[in-house]
Image 1 (tube, helix red, strand yellow):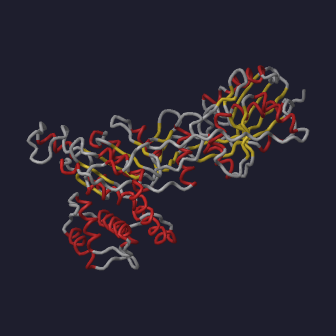
Image 2: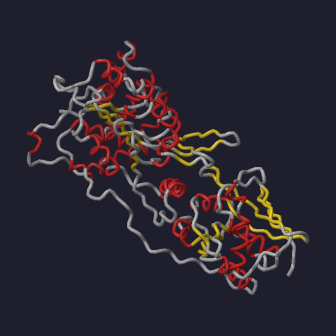
Image 3: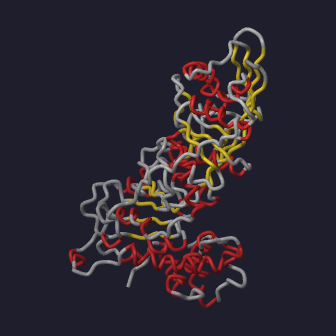
Length: 514
């Protein structure tokens, strides 16, 4: 048995960003000892307790000598048990039990069971994406993770069931045989919101218009009204009118799911925008991300490229609502820790739903309301002005009257989705040279300067509201963005006074549909 140096590769994740790690193993004469260096966390530092029995039960025991493993670069924290397989391959290579230099340029990811099985781990998709960007062309992953690893182009995926399988592959590779390529797993139909259609909504023309505008320009939406009028139903159907995600966008959302979902959950590339609706009792870490040890993405990152729906929004903790302000502006959430700063994407469409008061009956004359005036005032004040100032569309959803139960139904999601897609294409042609895709993302100073500055006749009412202090400068810009979206929906090249008035009315919650 030859004792010496073994080398292979793995990936260390910090958020969705990955760094290629050289796994170096050295075996020297001396008392039996297995040490791991390079900032391993407790789970990674326990790898020797898994690698030794896994190698022994696989028929390739680790030599009873001094084994030193270095995870380089040593300054980057290494977290989790996903380094088990790479550590085992590097050690067995140093022991001469894995022959040839094939393993040097292969990334190995997976946890080892004591009987030698390779178990699935979370975060395979972002790790393989990072490996691909670093120029790696071969990765070995657990069988459970083959589907998500194969979503990455230009990478050959090898699925390992046991450590013995990997050792046998490299033994054959030493004689010129290629590593076996993992077959594609059975396709699983994409999980969609079955039966959900905008045609199910009875009446509510104002809310339907606001929903269509939100989908068109990426505008945040607040719906207020008594319980049972369809606010949740409307919010759930917003994803049915949004365009499908591009491949790059879908990979982003799936990478987040790979970190937070069940192992092996990601198989196919589902291009349906995500819909995330956390409960109002959720903690700050559950919404924004974080947690003990590893900073995992929260609800706002799981809703990336999709919809984040906060039902009963005033019931959420004030700290949770306030933490939404920065991601709404920047499109990402930053989690600061003592040793590192983790960033997750959070470009979501926010939909808020609120009752008029704690009991929900303070509408119309409010004769059935049991709340005291101070309770109503306090309830309404839970959503702060700075947060609401970032919400472009604010619409009241009234109780449905029996007259709305006629034979005529509202437009279906398919019909509305076609209009939304056409309007988004117009936005893409207008803004793509400058790097934007939606009206809701265009900086206000661009809309207030030529060539996109609207004539004074179109913005007269908005200008007056700004002078009187009824809207802030941020609100001014957001009204202009909604006006451009309304014009795109109508097929107009430039917004007119009607579109600006509509944007202003929607911002103040005073829209009355024709």
